[in-house]
Length: 359
Ligand code: SAM
Image (cartoon, rainbow, N blue to C red):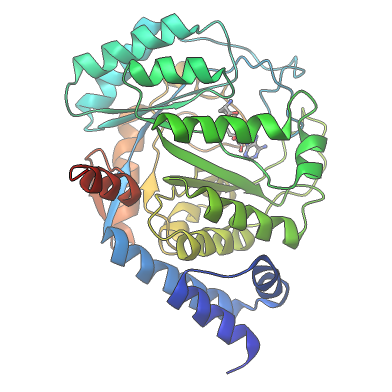
């Protein structure tokens, strides 16, 4: 067996590779190797999670953002976006609709919009948990706040928090985030974990200036952090941002990262991201066949969906929540998987709960 096949076998058998080994693999990977990687990642996913794909209802409740990330279509400096905020009542109406459609996790995502204070979010989370007690999990994806705020929102009932680390390269992070600090992002992720949230981290693939060693570092950082969820998507340029003329990430490179994430952190939940579905009509199905096991259909009201344009040509802009629900179900079934509408907690969280019962 040659060196590369040894690496493919090693990551499958041991769920471990060094940064140098990952970089080596990425430098020389062929289309045949990719197929081996996808198939091993799928087998690993089946071992940890079986044939099920978990659904989450995604509510994009505000596109107002105080940050200015160079890649993002809703960055503060983009004066061309029509901004919106959903009121708590409108967010609850989305949850009612989502609940009716069978979702048992609601992901509340927004730009970094401090109009939604700790008190307002706390009351909203409390009401969602009360309304659908005890079935529903609430996931937040609202960016950086004080650790005390994360603590208070956890106490109000929030279960999970998604915050991509975006890139594990400090240099690249600082270039892309003129209003943010690399250390702050990591401190937020550590605080969220410490508080007891199921945490989602993750990164973009194909960022301008990103090297294969940077991508290897992303995977090593995730292995060390051991989050419950890992979101990996291609960078897709938005014309009204400073990176509008750059090349985006490719479907192949992103799928390789999804498969390696599955092999290196086998008990994590990995979404087949909307960005993958935007790059290729079957992008999400391909991700499911490469080790992903979550899909997050959008339940944002159709009237504002197109305004949550992190990148251009985002799919489902004209769809209604019920269209997305059944379209996703058909797509999942078309590649041989089953929809699971339960809470879909991570294996790490489930085994942690079981262990502590005996403490
Ligand atoms: N503000 C929250 C935060 O920072 O975590 C959540 C919303 S943020 C817009 C959600 C994610 O969108 C980011 O973590 C980033 O990875 C992704 N994103 C933004 N612009 C993108 C682009 N042009 N292409 C692909 N993904 C993008």
